[in-house]
Amino acid sequence: MMKLHSVEVKTLTPEIFRMFQVNTALLTAGDEKHLNTMTIGWGQLGTLWNLPVCTVYVRPERYTYEFMEAQDTFSVSVLPDSARDIARLCGTRSGREVDKVSACNLTVCRGAGNTPFFEEAELVLVCRKLFVQDMDPACVRDERIFASYGEKGGWHRIYTGEVLEAYCKS
Ligand SMILES: Cc1cc2nc3c(=O)[nH]c(=O)nc-3n(C[C@H](O)[C@H](O)[C@H](O)COP(=O)(O)O)c2cc1C
Image 1 (cartoon, rainbow, N blue to C red):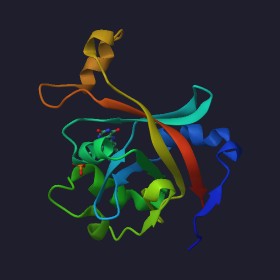
Image 2: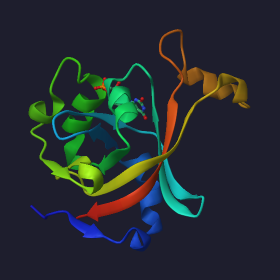
Image 3: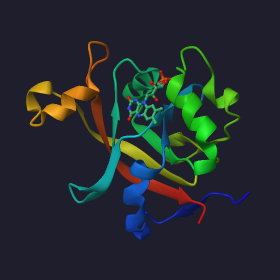
């Protein structure tokens, strides 16, 4: 299997802007002893405050939320199509009830700030939190958005991180 290797963030092609549409990713945060990961389908990449950034959205009831709050950094491990089983398990089970790293046989790697990510990814971004804000229903300007929120579950917390490192296999 091809190994992930470090690449210059600035050399990433616009193709990565499609990544949240086409591929699912694992959002991971933790320290040396404890980590948690979950599947994400929402996110953006771009430039903010003249920095390369990645923004992800986490509902407060996720176990991953606790790790996102506790840590300064997080990673986004974009999975290949062949990893659909991993995406399904990590997107339907909570780390409160199952050790997803063991259950999915994931190989933990470490990036800047000891940030955990996974060798099974085809692209990895290691990010440091720059800006954190809760979504506010009062800011909604299109009724369709309310369809994503029912009685249960809070509005997402928005985490914008500076992309510190990128790793890919191509
Ligand atoms: C395809 C897919 C995309 C998802 N995207 C998100 C997301 O962007 N934000 C979020 O909070 N939850 C998202 N989820 C739900 C979480 O992955 C799911 O609730 C997970 O079990 C949470 O695990 P945790 O409790 O260990 O954090 C997604 C689930 C799937 C299947």
